[in-house]
Image 1: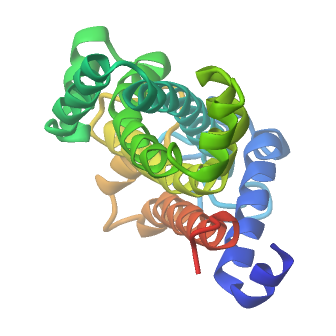
Image 2: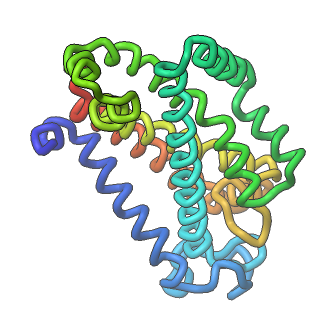
Image 3: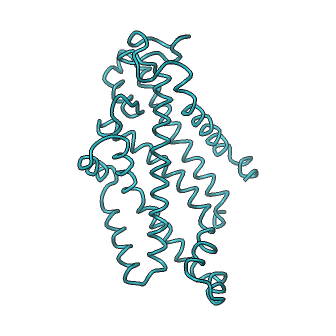
Length: 270
Protein backbone atom coordinates (compact mmCIF):
# COMPACT_ATOMS: atom_id res chain seq x y z
CA UNK A 1 0.00 0.00 0.00
CA UNK A 2 2.90 2.36 0.76
CA UNK A 3 4.39 1.62 -2.64
CA UNK A 4 1.08 2.35 -4.29
CA UNK A 5 0.77 5.67 -2.46
CA UNK A 6 4.23 6.67 -3.69
CA UNK A 7 3.35 5.73 -7.25
CA UNK A 8 -0.18 7.15 -7.33
CA UNK A 9 -0.45 10.81 -6.27
CA UNK A 10 -4.17 10.80 -7.09
CA UNK A 11 -4.76 8.07 -4.50
CA UNK A 12 -2.79 10.00 -1.89
CA UNK A 13 -4.53 13.26 -2.73
CA UNK A 14 -7.94 11.59 -2.61
CA UNK A 15 -7.26 10.02 0.79
CA UNK A 16 -6.02 13.34 2.21
CA UNK A 17 -9.11 15.13 0.91
CA UNK A 18 -11.46 12.50 2.38
CA UNK A 19 -9.78 12.76 5.79
CA UNK A 20 -10.19 16.54 5.68
CA UNK A 21 -13.80 16.13 4.54
CA UNK A 22 -14.59 13.89 7.51
CA UNK A 23 -13.03 16.42 9.89
CA UNK A 24 -14.98 19.19 8.15
CA UNK A 25 -18.22 17.23 8.54
CA UNK A 26 -17.61 16.43 12.21
CA UNK A 27 -16.31 19.77 13.48
CA UNK A 28 -17.31 22.28 10.78
CA UNK A 29 -20.91 22.90 11.90
CA UNK A 30 -19.64 23.92 15.35
CA UNK A 31 -16.79 26.21 14.27
CA UNK A 32 -18.90 29.16 13.22
CA UNK A 33 -22.63 29.92 13.35
CA UNK A 34 -25.61 27.60 13.65
CA UNK A 35 -26.35 26.25 10.14
CA UNK A 36 -30.11 26.36 10.75
CA UNK A 37 -30.53 29.92 12.04
CA UNK A 38 -30.48 33.30 10.37
CA UNK A 39 -27.34 34.82 11.85
CA UNK A 40 -26.74 37.87 9.71
CA UNK A 41 -27.80 39.77 6.64
CA UNK A 42 -28.62 38.01 3.40
CA UNK A 43 -25.97 37.40 0.73
CA UNK A 44 -23.10 38.71 2.86
CA UNK A 45 -19.70 38.31 1.16
CA UNK A 46 -16.95 36.16 2.72
CA UNK A 47 -15.31 37.82 5.68
CA UNK A 48 -13.93 37.37 9.15
CA UNK A 49 -17.29 36.60 10.75
CA UNK A 50 -18.75 34.59 7.87
CA UNK A 51 -15.88 32.78 6.18
CA UNK A 52 -17.91 31.91 3.06
CA UNK A 53 -20.63 34.52 3.45
CA UNK A 54 -24.34 33.94 4.01
CA UNK A 55 -27.11 32.54 1.84
CA UNK A 56 -30.38 33.98 0.62
CA UNK A 57 -31.93 34.00 4.12
CA UNK A 58 -28.81 34.95 6.10
CA UNK A 59 -27.57 31.50 7.18
CA UNK A 60 -23.85 30.79 7.43
CA UNK A 61 -22.69 29.09 4.20
CA UNK A 62 -19.63 27.49 5.80
CA UNK A 63 -21.66 25.78 8.51
CA UNK A 64 -24.29 24.64 6.03
CA UNK A 65 -21.66 23.14 3.73
CA UNK A 66 -20.18 21.27 6.71
CA UNK A 67 -23.57 19.98 7.81
CA UNK A 68 -24.32 18.99 4.22
CA UNK A 69 -21.07 17.01 4.19
CA UNK A 70 -22.15 15.26 7.38
CA UNK A 71 -25.51 14.31 5.88
CA UNK A 72 -23.98 13.16 2.59
CA UNK A 73 -21.37 10.97 4.28
CA UNK A 74 -23.91 9.54 6.71
CA UNK A 75 -26.39 8.65 3.98
CA UNK A 76 -23.64 7.30 1.73
CA UNK A 77 -22.11 5.08 4.41
CA UNK A 78 -25.46 3.73 5.60
CA UNK A 79 -26.59 2.99 2.04
CA UNK A 80 -23.32 1.26 1.18
CA UNK A 81 -23.42 -0.81 4.38
CA UNK A 82 -26.94 -2.00 3.55
CA UNK A 83 -26.12 -2.65 -0.10
CA UNK A 84 -22.97 -4.57 0.84
CA UNK A 85 -24.87 -6.78 3.26
CA UNK A 86 -27.75 -7.47 0.88
CA UNK A 87 -25.51 -7.74 -2.19
CA UNK A 88 -23.12 -10.22 -0.55
CA UNK A 89 -26.04 -12.30 0.73
CA UNK A 90 -27.69 -12.39 -2.70
CA UNK A 91 -24.41 -13.14 -4.44
CA UNK A 92 -23.59 -16.01 -2.08
CA UNK A 93 -27.09 -17.47 -2.36
CA UNK A 94 -26.96 -17.13 -6.12
CA UNK A 95 -23.73 -19.15 -6.21
CA UNK A 96 -24.00 -21.75 -3.47
CA UNK A 97 -27.77 -22.28 -3.12
CA UNK A 98 -29.71 -24.89 -5.17
CA UNK A 99 -29.74 -24.07 -8.85
CA UNK A 100 -33.42 -23.12 -8.99
CA UNK A 101 -33.05 -20.66 -6.13
CA UNK A 102 -29.79 -19.20 -7.45
CA UNK A 103 -31.35 -18.74 -10.88
CA UNK A 104 -34.39 -17.04 -9.38
CA UNK A 105 -32.22 -14.64 -7.35
CA UNK A 106 -30.09 -13.69 -10.34
CA UNK A 107 -33.14 -13.13 -12.55
CA UNK A 108 -34.59 -10.83 -9.88
CA UNK A 109 -31.25 -8.99 -9.81
CA UNK A 110 -31.40 -8.61 -13.59
CA UNK A 111 -34.91 -7.18 -13.31
CA UNK A 112 -33.63 -4.57 -10.86
CA UNK A 113 -31.00 -3.54 -13.42
CA UNK A 114 -33.77 -2.86 -15.93
CA UNK A 115 -34.92 0.21 -13.97
CA UNK A 116 -32.83 3.42 -14.14
CA UNK A 117 -31.52 3.97 -10.61
CA UNK A 118 -32.52 7.59 -10.16
CA UNK A 119 -36.00 7.06 -11.64
CA UNK A 120 -36.59 4.06 -9.37
CA UNK A 121 -35.41 6.11 -6.38
CA UNK A 122 -37.84 8.90 -7.32
CA UNK A 123 -40.67 6.37 -7.57
CA UNK A 124 -39.85 4.89 -4.15
CA UNK A 125 -39.63 8.31 -2.49
CA UNK A 126 -42.95 9.28 -4.08
CA UNK A 127 -44.51 6.24 -2.41
CA UNK A 128 -42.84 6.33 1.04
CA UNK A 129 -42.35 10.09 1.44
CA UNK A 130 -39.40 12.50 1.64
CA UNK A 131 -36.62 12.90 4.19
CA UNK A 132 -33.42 11.24 5.27
CA UNK A 133 -34.83 7.77 5.95
CA UNK A 134 -36.80 7.53 2.69
CA UNK A 135 -33.69 8.60 0.76
CA UNK A 136 -31.67 5.87 2.48
CA UNK A 137 -34.34 3.28 1.70
CA UNK A 138 -34.62 4.35 -1.94
CA UNK A 139 -30.88 4.46 -2.60
CA UNK A 140 -30.29 1.16 -0.78
CA UNK A 141 -32.86 -0.60 -2.97
CA UNK A 142 -31.16 0.71 -6.10
CA UNK A 143 -27.58 0.05 -4.93
CA UNK A 144 -27.48 -3.63 -3.93
CA UNK A 145 -27.93 -5.28 -7.38
CA UNK A 146 -24.51 -4.09 -8.59
CA UNK A 147 -22.83 -5.59 -5.51
CA UNK A 148 -24.79 -8.84 -5.90
CA UNK A 149 -23.74 -9.20 -9.54
CA UNK A 150 -20.10 -8.46 -8.70
CA UNK A 151 -20.05 -10.98 -5.83
CA UNK A 152 -21.75 -13.62 -7.97
CA UNK A 153 -19.19 -13.17 -10.76
CA UNK A 154 -16.23 -13.30 -8.39
CA UNK A 155 -17.55 -16.31 -6.46
CA UNK A 156 -18.13 -18.22 -9.69
CA UNK A 157 -14.39 -17.99 -10.41
CA UNK A 158 -13.37 -18.90 -6.86
CA UNK A 159 -15.64 -21.76 -5.90
CA UNK A 160 -13.71 -24.31 -7.98
CA UNK A 161 -10.23 -23.14 -6.96
CA UNK A 162 -7.90 -25.68 -5.36
CA UNK A 163 -8.05 -24.29 -1.83
CA UNK A 164 -11.86 -24.33 -1.89
CA UNK A 165 -12.02 -27.87 -3.30
CA UNK A 166 -9.50 -29.04 -0.69
CA UNK A 167 -11.51 -27.46 2.14
CA UNK A 168 -14.72 -29.03 0.85
CA UNK A 169 -13.01 -32.44 0.59
CA UNK A 170 -11.90 -32.13 4.21
CA UNK A 171 -15.55 -31.81 5.29
CA UNK A 172 -15.94 -28.02 5.57
CA UNK A 173 -19.52 -26.76 5.45
CA UNK A 174 -20.69 -24.29 2.83
CA UNK A 175 -20.95 -21.48 5.38
CA UNK A 176 -17.39 -22.17 6.56
CA UNK A 177 -16.14 -22.17 2.96
CA UNK A 178 -17.85 -18.88 2.21
CA UNK A 179 -16.77 -16.93 5.30
CA UNK A 180 -13.34 -18.47 5.85
CA UNK A 181 -11.99 -19.12 2.37
CA UNK A 182 -14.00 -17.27 -0.28
CA UNK A 183 -15.18 -13.89 1.00
CA UNK A 184 -11.73 -12.90 2.35
CA UNK A 185 -10.52 -13.04 -1.24
CA UNK A 186 -13.05 -10.36 -2.22
CA UNK A 187 -12.51 -7.69 0.43
CA UNK A 188 -9.98 -5.81 -1.69
CA UNK A 189 -12.18 -5.41 -4.73
CA UNK A 190 -15.30 -4.88 -2.60
CA UNK A 191 -13.58 -2.06 -0.72
CA UNK A 192 -12.54 -0.43 -3.98
CA UNK A 193 -15.97 -0.79 -5.58
CA UNK A 194 -17.64 0.51 -2.42
CA UNK A 195 -15.66 3.75 -2.64
CA UNK A 196 -16.80 4.28 -6.23
CA UNK A 197 -20.39 3.34 -5.35
CA UNK A 198 -20.23 5.75 -2.40
CA UNK A 199 -19.47 8.54 -4.86
CA UNK A 200 -22.52 7.54 -6.89
CA UNK A 201 -24.69 7.44 -3.78
CA UNK A 202 -23.65 10.94 -2.69
CA UNK A 203 -24.28 12.23 -6.21
CA UNK A 204 -27.71 10.55 -6.27
CA UNK A 205 -28.65 12.04 -2.90
CA UNK A 206 -27.61 15.48 -4.12
CA UNK A 207 -29.64 14.98 -7.30
CA UNK A 208 -32.75 14.05 -5.33
CA UNK A 209 -32.30 17.06 -3.05
CA UNK A 210 -31.70 19.30 -6.09
CA UNK A 211 -35.04 18.10 -7.48
CA UNK A 212 -36.71 18.92 -4.14
CA UNK A 213 -37.62 15.33 -3.19
CA UNK A 214 -34.57 14.40 -1.10
CA UNK A 215 -33.38 16.05 2.11
CA UNK A 216 -35.98 18.56 3.23
CA UNK A 217 -35.54 21.96 4.88
CA UNK A 218 -34.26 23.02 7.29
CA UNK A 219 -31.58 20.30 6.88
CA UNK A 220 -28.99 21.53 4.37
CA UNK A 221 -27.93 19.29 1.51
CA UNK A 222 -25.41 20.13 -1.16
CA UNK A 223 -28.07 19.45 -3.78
CA UNK A 224 -30.64 21.76 -2.20
CA UNK A 225 -27.96 24.44 -1.71
CA UNK A 226 -27.13 24.23 -5.42
CA UNK A 227 -30.81 24.52 -6.32
CA UNK A 228 -31.32 27.51 -4.03
CA UNK A 229 -28.20 29.31 -5.29
CA UNK A 230 -29.03 28.54 -8.93
CA UNK A 231 -32.02 30.85 -8.76
CA UNK A 232 -29.70 33.84 -8.16
CA UNK A 233 -26.52 32.63 -9.83
CA UNK A 234 -26.12 35.78 -11.92
CA UNK A 235 -26.18 38.07 -8.89
CA UNK A 236 -24.34 35.83 -6.39
CA UNK A 237 -22.28 33.24 -8.33
CA UNK A 238 -20.08 32.32 -5.35
CA UNK A 239 -23.05 30.88 -3.48
CA UNK A 240 -23.46 28.38 -6.33
CA UNK A 241 -19.72 27.73 -6.65
CA UNK A 242 -19.10 26.52 -3.09
CA UNK A 243 -21.46 23.50 -3.02
CA UNK A 244 -20.64 22.61 -6.64
CA UNK A 245 -16.90 22.57 -5.93
CA UNK A 246 -17.08 20.52 -2.73
CA UNK A 247 -19.48 18.01 -4.34
CA UNK A 248 -17.24 17.66 -7.40
CA UNK A 249 -14.07 17.27 -5.33
CA UNK A 250 -15.76 14.63 -3.17
CA UNK A 251 -16.82 12.61 -6.22
CA UNK A 252 -13.34 12.87 -7.74
CA UNK A 253 -11.63 11.91 -4.47
CA UNK A 254 -13.80 8.83 -3.91
CA UNK A 255 -13.21 7.64 -7.47
CA UNK A 256 -9.45 8.20 -7.19
CA UNK A 257 -9.33 6.30 -3.90
CA UNK A 258 -11.50 3.51 -5.31
CA UNK A 259 -9.27 3.07 -8.36
CA UNK A 260 -6.13 3.19 -6.24
CA UNK A 261 -7.43 0.68 -3.72
CA UNK A 262 -8.46 -1.69 -6.48
CA UNK A 263 -4.95 -1.61 -7.91
CA UNK A 264 -3.33 -1.98 -4.49
CA UNK A 265 -5.59 -4.60 -2.87
CA UNK A 266 -7.05 -6.67 -5.69
CA UNK A 267 -4.71 -9.64 -6.24
CA UNK A 268 -5.87 -9.88 -9.86
CA UNK A 269 -4.92 -6.28 -10.55
CA UNK A 270 -1.64 -5.62 -12.29
